[in-house]
Image 1 (cartoon, rainbow, N blue to C red):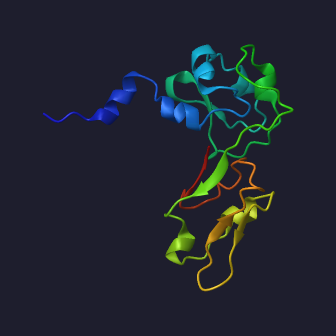
Image 2: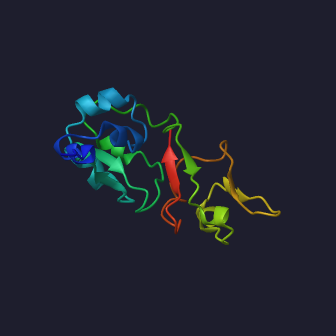
Length: 157
């Protein structure tokens, strides 16, 4: 009899997803997992409504809904000591484009670049126009994620 190990996630939290989708200004992933009470205050405080309940009931960001404007309201409302000062940089996450991008298949699409206010996404003109991410300009806000028709963009550490 074969065992589907993916189904085992139903009985516990998937800490990898929790860490990848954590809120801005979370000081330490372990501390977040240990001290977050899953109260939901941050969900209601988010003006963009992109904070959702994720694995194990932990709050996480869903960039398929929209972008983070880094307002800091999630950190301000939290009663637990899991966030660092919002005057600091929110995180070191950046947008990452995978191989399913339509541009790699020579299909014209610039939805990511058109949605990037920081202009971190550009297209190199030439034989094949593929997107380039300027890591210095990318804030990791996730504005490019939802508009991507092939779901080829994620925001990662």
